[in-house]
Structures are given as C-alpha cells and as structure tokens.
Length: 105
Image 1 (tube, one colour):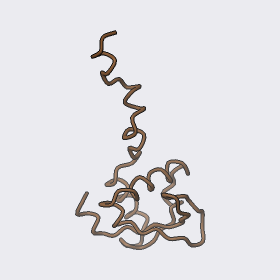
Image 2 (cartoon, one colour; image 1 turned 120 degrees about the horizontal axis):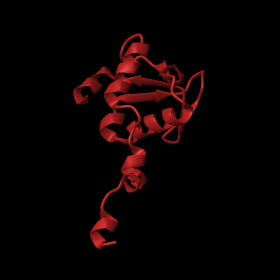
Image 3 (cartoon, helix red, strand yellow; image 1 turned 90 degrees about the vertical axis):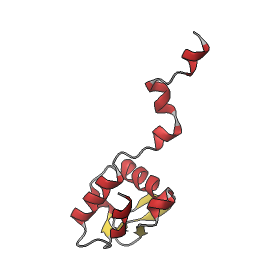
Image 4 (cartoon, helix red, strand yellow; image 1 turned 90 degrees about the horizontal axis):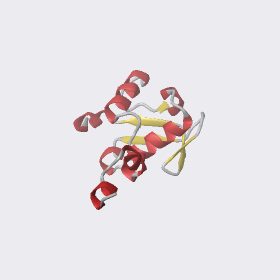
C-alpha cells in the first residue's frame, strides 16, 4: 500500500473524523421549519419533546447548534415543567428560536 492510498479518504475514515461525528442529523433550516410548525408564534418557548426526536438525537442536534456562536444567539433554552434534556451540559426542557434566524438560513 503506497503512501497516497493510506491517506486517501474512505467512507470509514470519513465517518471517524470529528466533523463527521458532529454533523447534525437535521439541517438548521429544517429544524426551524419544524419549530415554526410547533410554536404558536416565533420566539415562543416550545417543549423539546414536541420535536419527537429520540433523546440522543435531540441532545446531540441542539448541542451542536448551541455550540456554534452564529447559531446559538438565536436559541433560548429554558427549564420548566416537562421532560429534561441535556443540551451542551445544561438541563433544559424548552427552546425558543428568534425569527431573526431566517437571516442565516
């Protein structure tokens, strides 16, 4: 096996790279579309459980977006009554997303 072939990307290597592991399962645009279908109006808090995603996927998806400064400023997490999720190290139950997020979609 030559040097070139050892470093050539393969599906297996690609999946092991950190960026691939951190890639969200749902796009930001799709997430906001689902949010607006659930929320009475943009900016209103909705229970995370209303997104109907498996716990692991929910926590990973929202944590990834919360870690990105340009995205996280539009997300407002809160803790109230309801199912708790661990988002970027914090227990939260609800999310409100500012309508201004459309400027980056």
